[in-house]
Amino acid sequence: MTIYAYLETFQPRLFQTFGNALRSNNLSHAYLLDGEAGTPLKETAFYLAKSLVCDNPNPYACNTCASCLRFDEGNYTDFFFFDGAEISIKKESVLQLEKAFSMTSVEQKGVLIYVMHNVENMTIEAINSLLKFLEEPARNVYAFLTTNNEHNVLPTIKSRSQILHVQLIERTKLFELCKFMPLDDKDKELLIPFYNLPDLILAEAKTERYPIYKDALITVLTAFSENPKIGYLKAHELIAPLRDRFIIKRVFTYFALFFKDVINFSVNRPLLFPSFTPLLSALHKTLRNPLALTVKTYEVSKKVDDNVNINLLVDELLIAMIKDTTR
Ligand SMILES: [Zn+2]
Image (cartoon, rainbow, N blue to C red; front, side, top):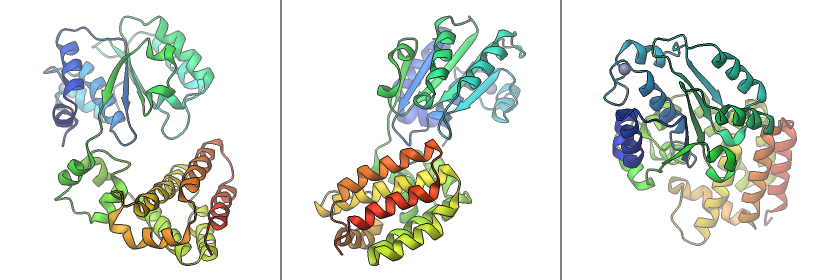
């Protein structure tokens, strides 16, 4: 599914609003895309940005002209991307942007565009620099900011942006869309909480990292449900050496989601991971207070961003889990 088809089918309001602005050449200088975790905010922001540089827009980007192709290849000179999803956006990035934009545009279109992904993860200094930048928008500069939580974005940023909401595709609908994918239900269930678009689910399943973190997650939780101390050893053997902070964070988030699902299991609510019912049932027998553990896991997960030693974090979480066992 192309992003165009995705927007047209699943985000009709956004599709209409931005389409009208493109057609009437009445664009805001800053857009804030707000959507829950899993919504393809980055992909949407890129596609909207590309629509401003396309040679044959209709009114959205055609994906086939020379400018669209160069944009897709990352070779469009007047476009800048800052990713707050992986590591927080720092002041230097904004200054770099200001410097680049103080010169005139290089491309014929004459527009300068930047995407700031997950603006809620900017440092205070970076936000202050960005604000100055947003306050006096140059005529040809356009910003696409994204966030997973509008409430974590400063009112001063929001008031300078037009907010576009990206709605989640409902879970059962998403499953239906993934019906013919060469993936088993376990993979679909594991990936759906993070990727709210079939193409993104399939793309992540094909990465090298996916089987690594999936295996670590399932092995550790299974071992833990059978014998917490073995689970502790497995966590140090499989999770601690992963090193990549994105992957570690992903594994911790899965822990939290599984603990939540243990609660769902215990009160007969629909499950996030129904294909893992035997594991959830075993965890249900092992854990005393999955709610407290869910909170604790999110707390530990947040520290991954603060460069805390991974071994310590694995220890902190697993010891909390061991303390919570019924054995
Ligand atoms: Zn084009």
